[in-house]
Length: 231
Ligand code: CA
Image 1 (tube, protein in one colour):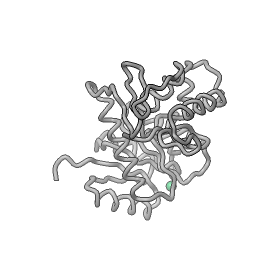
Image 2 (tube, rainbow, N blue to C red):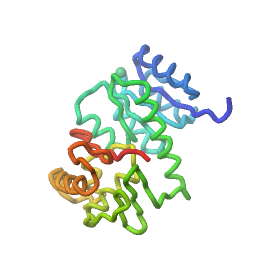
Image 3 (cartoon, rainbow, N blue to C red):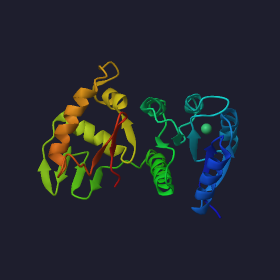
Image 4 (cartoon, rainbow, N blue to C red):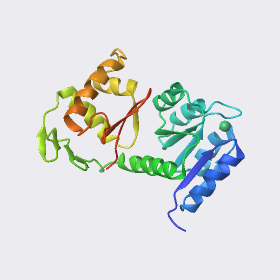
């Protein structure tokens, strides 16, 4: 019973909240629940959960505002759970600092996988957890040496291509939005032109993927951004 990870579910719909709670408890998580944004904001400092599952459509405050408020003082992993299908909501949630999003309806295994990823990343961002090498089957990235091996063969990437691959690999399993990537690569004043990214990604896929049309390493989240497969 010790060392169980505590998760806060912020969800006004009782049936969904119960479903998620049952699932998480069955996988040994401790669960606390909030039915409104205000309740969530008061529970986080007092209960110190290790992760928040946040519904965007709440009865009192909009979920994105709750997210913004939490991010003013906490870097706790937040996964947005949203019934909204508009890409804009996902993008703004991620840009406001959500670690990930999951769209309703979702499967249990998908939810659990996203939770594990977010928790792993929050552990990794702790000091002394710097990773130098990233590996997937057939792909090896050495960040220090700026080297990429595909099936043990050196692959030459341009500087921007390498930066893009590294950025995604360092956040493997998480979706990075187009705007976030552009800012990271070209700075905050860069024109938010996704076309340049697409061209770079096409080149990267041609170099890394066996079949660029069916990538195994870097996935496109349509209208949102890119996600690197997890180690
Ligand atoms: Ca709701």
